[in-house]
Length: 312
Image (cartoon, rainbow, N blue to C red):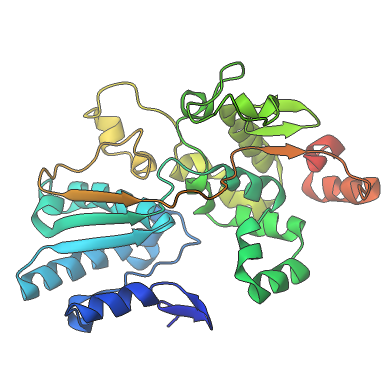
């Protein structure tokens, strides 16, 4: 069902399932908790009762096996599970996570968001598709960046990938981010900017603010992104985590900088990431020889923007 192998030669969970089988796991001891990754997490529960069903499934497996569950997640699945731990604490009991979850293994989860989330919503970038061989080339051929941007903005889940923590994490205008190596030859504008338009840099907080403003002024097809503030938060919590507003505010549950971990002293957490791979950190937009003024003017009219905003 596309959970093990998506297409020939492109495996998803196949290798892990095979290795778990080798050490004694069978289908009765495993559960694939697939979800509609287009929806904001609140609507997963409202439409599908996803978190209610997941909690019941985990309880049944724990009672049946006599052992607490180990949850393995990948990419945005980790954001979903982080949200779930807070949901379970509020709706299933403060000790639920500690009672039923032994360990949490995260594979490449962007808990603090990723810069490429910005590029996807700004200009429909989809670099990862280039690594999917024929599948990626088909997508690039049949769906333009404008169409991809409109699609990405229509998904209520996409903003969860936006960088969290603002300039304190990603760098202020004249102070580079903590992960920036000053010995690199990267252009200076990238040291503190997440996006640069024609040499004019914008920090992470400035970029997200302008992105959300543009979405609110755009057509109804961008409406889910315009509803960002109803479902998402990308801030940095500076006060007491026990404050009632944050404790019960589901907007913050997928943001580890604004919502505390569950009250689960026995829970083991493992976060695994690849190393030695070039990682997108910032973006520079500029006009090229193929820049089409007429196309941008038409796009601006269609989306109720100025030509400069449409070019951006």
